[in-house]
Image 1 (tube, rainbow, N blue to C red):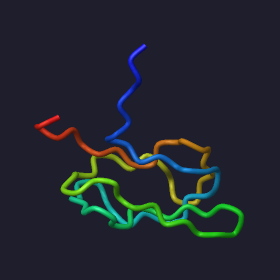
Image 2: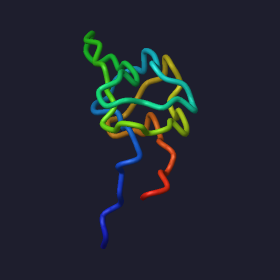
Image 3: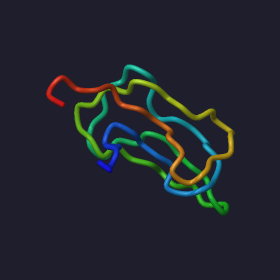
Amino acid sequence: PKPKDLGNFVMSPMPGTLISYGVQEGDIVEMGQELCVVEAMKMQNVIRSHKAGAKVGKLHGVVGASLRADEVLIEFEQMESE
């Protein structure tokens, strides 16, 4: 089977709690920009953008909610060149 392309998604790297978002739907992000903060084991982990010039399409998580590892947090809109 062909692997699913997850390049337009930001996923939680670990189980934890979503503390905050640093972006809103419709924002254009830069490489390395803070997207959100996930707390795990009393440590706050900043999740940064792996794309430059991408538009935030949808924020999937709810601030304060518990997260599973690999849960989708942010979805970028499909770019015309993709």
